[in-house]
Amino acid sequence: MATRLQYENNCEIGVFSKLTNAYCLVAIGGSENFYSTFEAELADVIPVVKTSIAGTRIIGRMCAGNKNGLLLPHTTTDQELQHLRNALPDNIVVQRVEERLSALGNCIACNDHVALTHPDLDADTEEMISDVLGVEVFKQTIAGNILVGSYCAFSNLGGLVHPHTSIEDLDELSTLLQVPLVAGTVNRGSDVIAAGLTVNDWTAFCGSDTTATELSVIENVFKLRGAQPTNLVEEMRKSLIDTYV
Image (cartoon, rainbow, N blue to C red):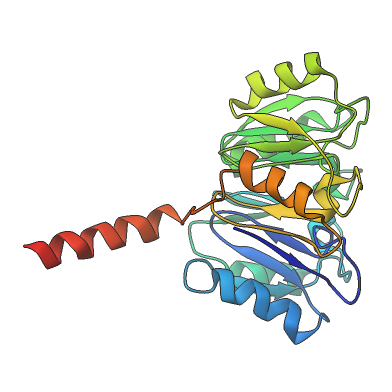
């Protein structure tokens, strides 16, 4: 299911949070309501960690991550790095990247298998993305925009991209990512998809301006209707089998 919320009267919640299948980061300094919305949906399954990155609250735009790892800009402080390493599960590799383009969330879009990156990223950074996140890396643009991390959001099940993406581009991206893609908007017509939406394989959070039509597109393409985290489903199945036995 997709949930609508705001961060301090701001609907760009993808700027202030980062959601993956293994953890969720939220910016410090938000209202209790903002945190409790994430915790109500996620706390039983994955850790919800409050943090800043490089002393800022725009954490969703500063970092890139998936279930395997988390990449942070070189401006991240030692305390923030240590806090994230302590708070996240042990199998998550947390790594700082020496990259000139330091807003990694704007430059990298990824799921657990594939990453799309800004065409000007260093070769070293590409290698680090591949190693830390365990993904195949493709340099791409989306509807002519080089900030691929800002103009699309995708999980392992589907993706939403900039509304002006051509059919040919959609086909090409869909083939690269191996997931179905749809061109659309969030927050009542905003084309900056990743700023208004943060998503994983079983839930999504979007800005409170998102219309019912946009919400239904999001729930359909990300297959969120009745979706549950896979480990929960497996546990339920085990307990059912135990009961029958």
